[in-house]
Image (tube, rainbow over all chains, first blue to last red; front, side, top):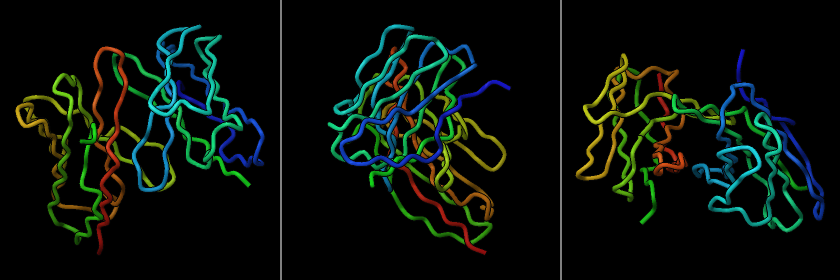
Length: 110
Length: 110
């Protein structure tokens, strides 16, 4: 079955470390997105990519980086410059027919 | 003014009640509108798209008022399983960027 796979489901990061969240899709979607969700808040857009080898900053890109070397993959790196990284991270992809979300990665700074 | 704004609730209702959620959006050029449902600690899932003519899916009715820039979701005969957070989502122009409201929490009680 087609879908989006995010890994890991839970991730713990020490302060000062970079971590990379994986997002893979086999839906053949061109567009992919990364969102962040904090408790009691809606999703906020971090980065998005409309096509391979191209991506754009969203509303809260500071402290994050992405790459889009393959259509299927859109990894997100949370760098040490991100001051408050503890959150629920959601990857999504879209086609003209709609959007699909991965099951999310819950990142905690310890 | 927030781009997409919802009453966060919570809405506490008894089983069988009818409950309505409203959502306002600021960009008059917005093209597509959706209601997503999010269960605790899970990813959002599409509940229904919202069409200009209004649309119904079983106990759920969605309506769009472009002139006043709001959308609504009506749930009739509430079930315990309807307890969740309901996210109002607006497609932001040609780039397909989704803007999420902060969500409205519904708790249906026996």
